[in-house]
Length: 460
Image (cartoon, rainbow, N blue to C red; front, top):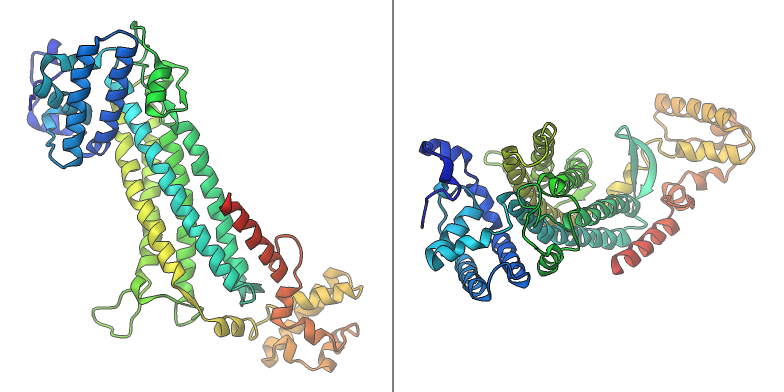
């Protein structure tokens, strides 16, 4: 393969090998080889369409590019650091195969708009895969929620028992988070679906190109309206990294809870052996390593977002070499995000809730205290006064080692004569959950409504 610099006409000194290696991006941007060839094929067809190049020249270039693409898919291509990036490597290979006519491919094009187009194409292909994986996880959440509408568990604030809730309601909370994630990635597609090609280096070109023709060839819905913006914009990548960070945050929160729920102290969940590991020294251990790994990988995704934000924050228009730093973080995030979603889905799908243990945890605490306060409020006691009455009963319960439902009616009535025998029905955890009929609440009917709505959304 030719290694003569394609831009070297005005240079006298040659860079040292280590300088070339420092400046080269081929070690990572070769991941966009397919996109680079696709962009070149569309570009050269446009050059024929606009009569900028002859049909004979275009036929030779197309045949050469298609041959390179076939070899790429067969794993037969070798790239060199001397040719810096994927664009120059592909052009050098094309030149070796079809001769000087390959040099006409770069007519009315710059590496600036070429690389931006490749990057858009790369992400444009991967966003639907991310969205599909999110949908799959949502389906699992809905399926599990439907099986556990009437499974009772403690709801927490400050990691303290707060009020009993439906486990199905808990699962649907994460469904809603993922719904917002999916909406963000879907919106991200709008800004990824804009084509930079035709902006050239920064100012457009004197050649009579047809950008709309090229966009149609490549499947882009829009073209950039400003050439400076086209070559320097990386908002679509920042949006992807931001959306990915929020998604990983949601998975990490869930993984944190899973790690707690499977512990000896909680015993709310049991994970499949397929998603846990053992200890090299402690035979009894069953560690939630996949949950911990996903939780840990959130940090690297956050880092990529901060890295690109920092790279972009001081760049003047238009293209700067700093923008070479835009890709590795995105590539790594794609490589992190898709397996994390897939592994999390499998881990959750095979997790078994300990129904009795969950319910038992709501019967040996004071998470029904709000029920008693609401009971008194419904009897006409001002809620603030009711809150104080129940607080005193809770204090007594702590001192005498009794739960509210275990206190005698006489003891309860000593705190408030408004309390009657029917209070014991209201203090049951399953009743406390079932009665919460407010829209979006944990009541069984409301959880079933959430599930019904989610199924309709996923079926769209």
